[in-house]
Amino acid sequence: MNTALWSLVGVLVAGMLLRMPIGFSMLVSGFAYLLVKRQDLGLVAEQVGNGLYNSYVLLAVPLFVFAANVMNAGTVSERIFDFCRILVGRMRGGLAQVDILVSVIFSGMSGSAIADAAGPGLVTIKQMLKKPEYSRGFAGAVVVASATLGPIIPPSIPMVIYALVSGASVGALFLGGVVPGFVMALLMMAVVHFIAVKRNMPREAPVPLREWPSILFRGALPLSMPVVLLGGIYSGAFTPTEAAAVAALHALILAGVIYRALTWRSFWGVVMESTRGSAVITIILAGSFMLNYAFTAEGVPQAMAQWVDSMQLSQLKFLLLVNVMFLVLGCFLDVSVLLLVFVPMLLPAAKLLGVDLVHFGVLVVLNMMIGLIHPPFGMLLFVTKALTGIPIGEMMREGWPFLVMLLLLLLAITVFPQIVLWLPQTMGYTTR
Image 1 (cartoon, one colour):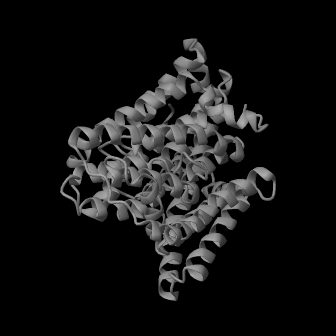
Image 2: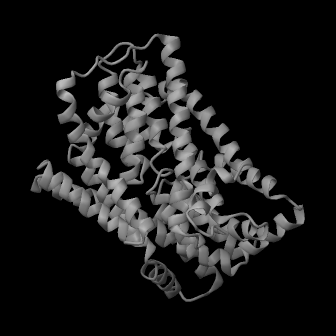
Image 3: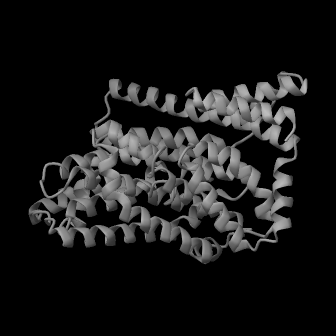
């Protein structure tokens, strides 16, 4: 690397060590690069402006964030919880099984792992901690693991961002996550069942039949959102970006008009929370555009592609190497940084080897979800600890079976791409 690139990396690492917000660290490192290169500092504004305002797909991100926050504020989580309790509550370890099924349903609305943990996850943790058979660590571990379903089952905010940097079809990516997402859910339920039988965890008390109609009706309305979204996208009624606007409107109608659970005060809180969340993502995106400009100008992606080519790696060996890299980086870096900085550097090598970009995208997102549940970064662990006070160590001791299961699924998806590609190809998408 030349002096300018070393300056960029040095400033970026220094900013992270000083706990500067990652988006600002990326922007400052971009300034450092331009200063050393003696280039016009106005290039920062140009790269950021072009990147943010020329991307139609990027509009989906704040809208999905808003829809998830509306759902969390509008008692939707509680209604889905009661609905799922009827379906799987009578299984051994019923509350944990309910949490996984709730996460599957909520995944079709939010596209965010953090929103899943902070909304439905908090509801189920409170219920589990009322019963002595569920330890604090187990309750937290189940919620943390099931929250990873959010960005795998469509819609998915990380997949939208991946589509932005890769040019892959958002619709094909969403379909590519369906089979892996449901396999994840089934495997998690199997893990819970094994632990529940071993520890003799309780079944939930049966819900009286006379209460079924009202509970099913209350829970059925939120289920209409994933049906409307996915039905609209794949029927051609609207694009994935427009689907985000439909999701936001659908959530507002449910929470504000039908349920009357959204006051003006809580609505304002939702708007402010969504604005803050979207601003954080936007600043990171802005910084990533500057870094990608620097890396492209210095030929880093092309150099990496040549390096991979010189190693004469097969597709499988390359993907295994990518898995190892992201699992290690996921210990220290945020999902957005991995998606926006490291993925663009790997894409030329992936294309050179003929790796399917939809398969690669789902694989990368699953890697990042695993990174959310293991230390030292483990964002979902920290979010759950902040919301519930459950120590991270307790969640990790109880969560290792879920982590092993996710790693095995990651290996299966790596070796057998059709787990991801079968559905989009069946639906007529060209995935390469």
